[in-house]
Length: 266
Image 1 (cartoon, rainbow, N blue to C red):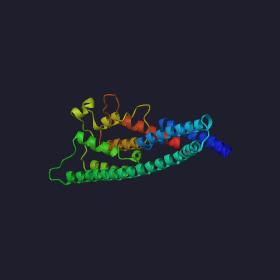
Image 2: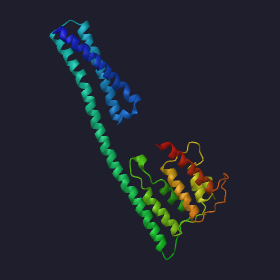
Image 3: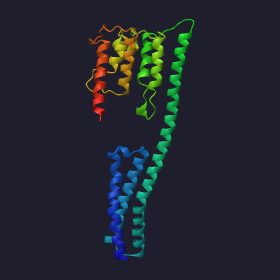
Image 4: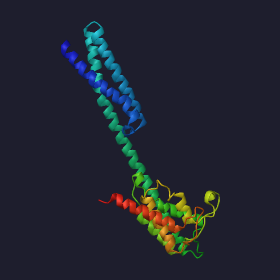
């Protein structure tokens, strides 16, 4: 019995020590495992309990007199060592499931908010177009409207890409002359680029000429919008404060698009 208990104790101690190390340290270094702050705290506590249980069981076995009470204590501590990993996994999957439920609820709420905003943009275009007092967008309003279009791919949030839908709204706004292709932005909100053309502001804010700029959905939408400006009469010879024309920005985005196509080609 003693020999069997010793073998069991050694095996459980080795496995428990490894798992305790995982519990105490993994949540500090591997954030992909950390679904919730509470889980990290619970895991660390369980790991410490595991280590203490191992230490006590070994101490009882090797350094104290053998007695029925001691045997029961050792058995109880070993049971704790065995149960704790399963308990931690139960907590892990429970909190993971809860996190998924919360994320799903957030996504649903966010999706409804995005769809509502797109519908409001559509209704605003219709109202401005049909109004007896024709009200085109100011330069500032055009900029706000177009940034919403450019940022309509919400894939980074785990949500759909609404670019196809919003690009139709942008085209509709240009077709109905709601956007002046040569309008400028003004006011405190845009004081860093006050007086710049709307298209220049878009290109500069998105750092189109930055070395780190990648051709993603945002860049693709930016290129499409700038091409709409050109198609609808933007002055292609006017240079901004960086000495760039709208053609320069479009050509830069086209070159990035070609590079991206080469990288993804089979």
